[in-house]
Image 1 (cartoon, rainbow, N blue to C red):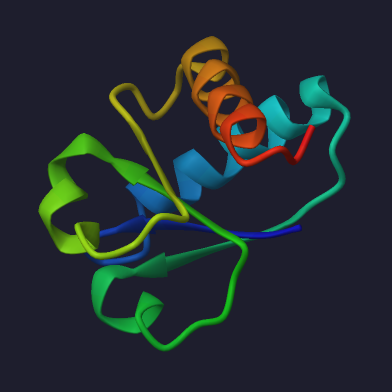
Image 2 (image 1 turned 135 degrees about the horizontal axis):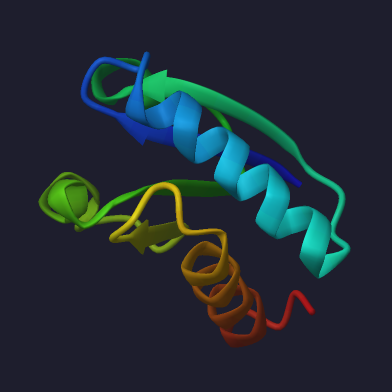
Length: 92
């Protein structure tokens, strides 16, 4: 599964989210490839899932393959949100 984490500039928050998502995916036992990008670049990227913060919800209003999180360092929250997404889409 290819996952992209997204923040405004693609440097700080998205890199932290990448590490958090990596830990959460490990706990879920799902293999993934995770990249981190900025808001402008992500629109041209192919991926299975985007993970970003609630602050960017309006930017992804037209997409269904997005998981929004509140705390970018909270592995438990991220794992729960990912698990909800995967169950809803019959991926686990």
